[in-house]
Every structure is written in C-alpha cells, then in structure tokens.
Image (cartoon, rainbow, N blue to C red):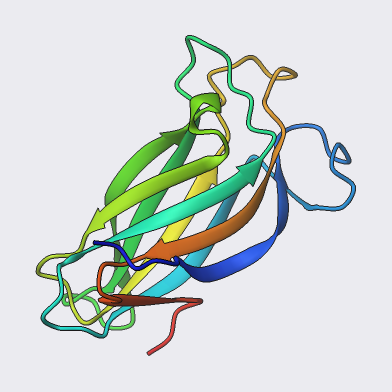
Length: 158
C-alpha cells in the first residue's frame, strides 16, 4: 500500500520543446531537463521499491510515435577511480497523451545503498520531425513510497 499522499520533491514550470516562448510563464529548457534527487531509505524493513510521479501540462503526442523519454539514472561512486562516478540507467518510460499528464515510474532499489542518487531526465520525442515537436510544461516531481520507506529530496545530499 502506498502512502496516502505522495511526497512533493520538486514543483515549478519548465517548458520543454522547440518553440521558446509558447509558455511565457515557464522557464524554457529546450529539448531536455534532468532533476537530481536523493532517495534515502528511512524504513529498513519496508519494500525496496518506490514510485516517482511526473506531472505535466499540455502533453500531446502523435499516434505512431514513442512519446517523451523518461530516464532514471543512478550516479554512484566508481570504486576503481577515486573522485569519479558511474552512471547506470535504472529504468526508462515514455510520457504520452494517454497518460493524461501524470506518469508513474516504478523503481526497484533492491541491493542499493541507503542513499541513492538519481537523475530524472525528460527528453522530448525527437522521432517527430523538427518543427512538429510537442511543447509542454513539466510541473511536479513526487515520490510515492509504501509505508514511507523512501524519502526523496531535490539535489544530491550526503
């Protein structure tokens, strides 16, 4: 059972797409945005999964195209190279019109350290020809964790 209310990790208005100024009340990021978050396991007896929820506005993808790519990447110290890290893709998903501007992305964090550093990247669907890219706004990132097992915070924190 998930907690009754998802935990707000980030809220704002970031415009993704190829037409700057379409949403004049949002910061324009271009084709991609990535939010760094720290997931901290605070309930060691809880399940090793959590769900990230991305909330958007105006997502309108074309049928026959894959949709906007969501990539969750883990950043971990490289044991073979001091002061370096390795990147591992934990999961990917696609944001489409049929998601109604709310996309849940489940993460299995079994066999991970207590603190997990991840980047949540959203890249617009560029399979569509330039000039027809979908312009939309990313508005929230939330964390849904059963029994409040994982707490999330924006940024990488030791």
